[in-house]
Image 1 (cartoon, rainbow, N blue to C red):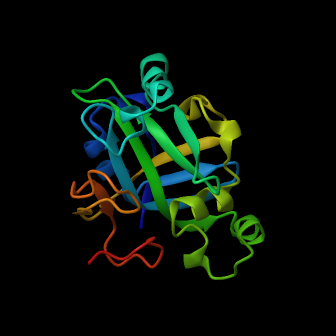
Image 2 (cartoon, rainbow, N blue to C red):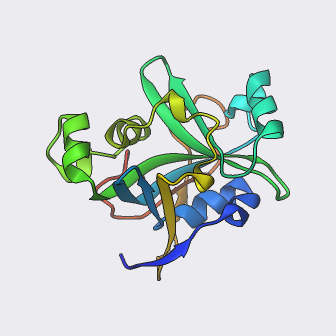
Length: 193
């Protein structure tokens, strides 16, 4: 997939979580020299979405109020995997976009070493695998990644329309088609049904 040097700025993350999650498909995400093309995301809304952390966690609601759009929201899922989200706010609805999968394009040796895997499509094919491959953990929580010298996100060129399907790995509000993916990517966490 062709890319340009058009950086995603804060304005990109000032829309609605669903539009942002859809718009990230095909964009390039780079963190500390490792990079990949975003092929799977999920949107979560801060209000009225039982699957969002803000539904049951006052700290998550404070996070939305106190941070700028584009800030990293990183948490440990079931005490095992770090999950990387970016805050989306400033549009009609606030919330988060979870980065679910990347197709690796740079820093492959480091990713393979961290993941103890050789096959490129297995390096970032799930949200916990992605953070492990990129070396992302809880220390990134609350960081304005858009203002970080270690982060770079660039827009896709000529990307096909992403497919929307129900979110996965959750037990509440799972019928919402807020999971977006690049059809046919070998790096998806779970192929669509």
